[in-house]
Image (cartoon, rainbow, N blue to C red):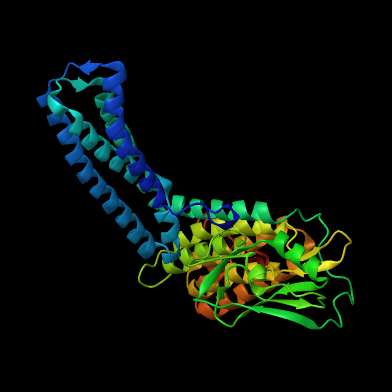
Length: 428
């Protein structure tokens, strides 16, 4: 197992199927012959013909599965975002399908080797029946795999990405009623750096941080640890990972580094911005001149609004961790409310500046957030609404287009709501 309970590599799944099928195909017929002695009514020639057809068909079916998986991955990379390829390729249905097809092929070969072995007549009953059962399981998995292609529909892809983001938001953040974990004035002042831990190795994405381990080590040193990197950052050789302030004891760098989980790609674990990043990627790719699909961008904004609504009702200030005596021992950098809004709005606003549909949806999104979230979230939202108004004024020379873009509409071009600015224009 990987650290922190991460799953095993996906290729382990078909390997386990193959590792189980080979000894099963060799041992089950022998055990059945020695202890049960049951034989099937099939003749040896018919049984060999059936098993030969199944083994050859499984090879073809496995090739089809690989082809479907390749198409799914390529389509995801081109149509949505290359960063979604990782999650599509990790679909367990694909890997279990390959595993069952491989197991059926290998087990059938083992069963064929026993038929008429050493002059024995007859076909083992249960062993041959097992081949039929595996074949039916293979057909079922193939049907499930075909249905999995429906995941490539834009609405399902957005919901898939949104669900992963919602899960990490609920896991990471407490409700807004929880007190923020801020430091007390002067608590960290006048402390010198007693240790700096730097990264060495090939560039890797920081996937997660074990705060409990770092908190225990910081308490052991008697100082305060401040992380210099955030989950989602790419670590480069020589980059500071953390600094220890006012520590009385030194801890080996490798011990500190055991609390950091790295990999080649970002993950959703402890990274609530990643889901929004993928949704924004889908939106701005849809708004590119080559695709020109603002409706997809509007659908992505639906998921983004749900994420921001959840984040706005959570306590985001969770970065300062204290020991049992209430002393700040660990400072972790987490995104602020402004960081989430900047990621969610800026690129879509820029790429969709000339789309009436996108402008209307974004105006409705911001108004809905202001109406639903507490007052402390309003200032940043008002700032982005002013930015959106400036974009509309700058992008539309025609007054009628400017008026249409200034309306609020949850569907983009559906049922508009008259805004205060639009009412003033009509009255004027």
